[in-house]
Amino acid sequence: APAPGNRRAGPSGGGGRMLRGAPEGQATAVARPLSTASVLCHVEPVGRWFEAFIKRRNMHVSASFQELEDEKELSEESGDEELQLEEFPMLKTLDPKDWKNQDHYLVLGLGHMRYKASQKQIKAAHKAMVLKHHPDKRKAAGEHIGEGDNDYFTCITKAYEILSDPMKRRAFNSVDPTFDNTVPSKSEAKENFFEVFSPVFERNARWSNIKNVPKLGDADSSFEEVDAFYSFWYNFDSWREFSYLDEEEKEKAECRDERRWIEKQNRATRAQRKKEEMNRIRTLVDTAYSCDPRIKKFKEEEKAKKEAEKKAKVDAKRKEQEEKEKQRQAELEAARLAKEKEEEETRQQALLMKKEKDMQKKAIKKERQKLRTICKNWNYFSDNEAECVKMMEEVEKLCDRLELASLQCLNEALTSTTREEGKTAVVKQIEEVNEQMRKEREEADARLRQATKSSEKSTGGSGGSSKNWPEDDLQLLIKAVNLFPAGTNSRWEVIANYMNLHSTTGIKRTAKDVINKAKSLQKLDPHQKDDINKKAFDKFKKEHGVVPQAEIAAPSERFEVPLTDSSPWTTEEQKLLEQALKTYPVNTPERWEKIAASVPGRSKKDCMKRYKVGQMLFLVLLSEYIHVVRP
Image (cartoon, rainbow, N blue to C red; front, side, top):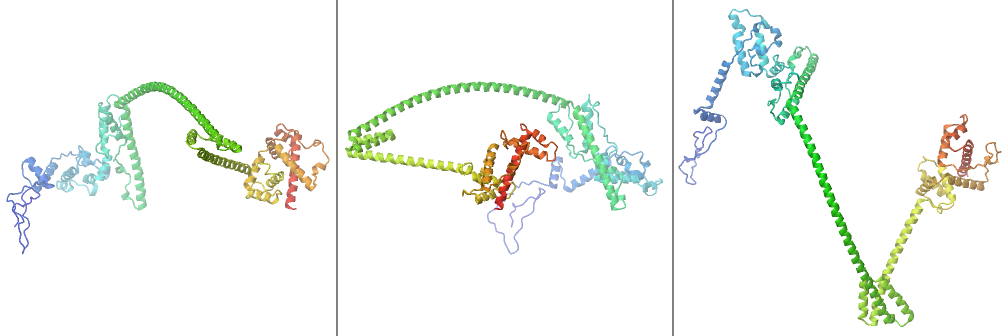
């Protein structure tokens, strides 16, 4: 059987139920002895039991949940009985057909409460009005009742219908006829700002979607409070809407299109009124901001603070500059001292190095003299005079090439050995020196060959060498450039192939060689170009015996002088002449006078001579082209 101490407390804080016993056919065994004392369990009530617990603790009474509910209903009924209604004196004169323009709160007797009235109060007011003004009661009292909806009781029904629906009530509250929409002017708030604007903002706070609306405050409000107030109102989120003022009701429409049209018109009207409402709020906030004495005070404080910060910044900058100047002077002085110290150390080091160098020179000179003396005493390790002279030269080579340590080691070896061993040591050293000199010569020859190869490559790649471009190839290049003008497909490859086909020198040209040489020819002055053209013309006359018609023709009055200019034409003059020839065609009156005027420094005769020479050169090139194309 379960132990008497294993009881569990119920949710109400009272006694609990017993633990479940063993099923039939089974027995309950005691695993360990249990204490007979009761177990104290800490239980906390929740929900409705907690409410009952608080009730008992505060009122020192015991009450169940149902008793609390009954008490709550009784308190609500007593509240309804205490509701004070203000009878609307003009109630019986209202027109039921004009119910939309009536004040619904006044109709229900809630004109003193208006939007603050709760739904229960509205319900209670309607109940009271029904009990008093219902047509059946009035008819029983002998009062005349209007037929159908013509009785003023319809106004009470409409009022309750509007105010009992939260959406319709919000729409009616948005256009509350008792609400003051006026905005104070600046002149009204000039003397008593807080007394004028505080009630206005409190009145308009009812439209806010956010419940905790900040207050305007007073003259002692902090900057954070004022800033939070104006930030809230500049970003005011209003729930006020104007659907109650819709002129058309879409429920009365006869078809869907008419309903859509009515809805569209209503949306546009609501949006316009909403815009006007937000402009009114913005005007209110702007007027208050401009008249607020705290804003002026904050601006003056901010200005004074900025001026103080600016002055402090200027002072700090001046001090910083002074500190920097002092630091710069200190750094210059330190740099000067360091430089003097470094120069002194450098001078001392130079003197020390000079001493060491002098000592090394003396030591090397001494070791060289010692080597010469030893070799001389041993007759340069040979009795043959020719071999002695050769060994003397090799010893001098050792003196020139070996360093101090090598000379010392060699002299020590020669001092402590016999003549034959000394000769072996000297010969070995000579072979090492000769091998080193041979490697140095090979490296120098390799560098020289590489430099020569690079120079030859750059000279050949430039295409500007007269050795690689004989006169015949230059003339052939000029002819090919004229034969294949700009715009020819793969022009330079075609010119290179043409030259390789017709060249008599046998030198193969690439497109890159042809481009480089053509660029170098473009850089020549006109006099050199005339020389090249003259050589080409002479070659043409020599090979073909062609005499241009211009030479055998009778000289005219204008061409009594040779066809050579007294001074060569420059590139700029040639361009001006070509442009003038294009500008003034053949049928232009006084053509050559106008062309000569376009080329400064050239007369009419010079321009005509130059034009004639160009024609002759064109005929020569044309003849060569015909000879090449049709051999």
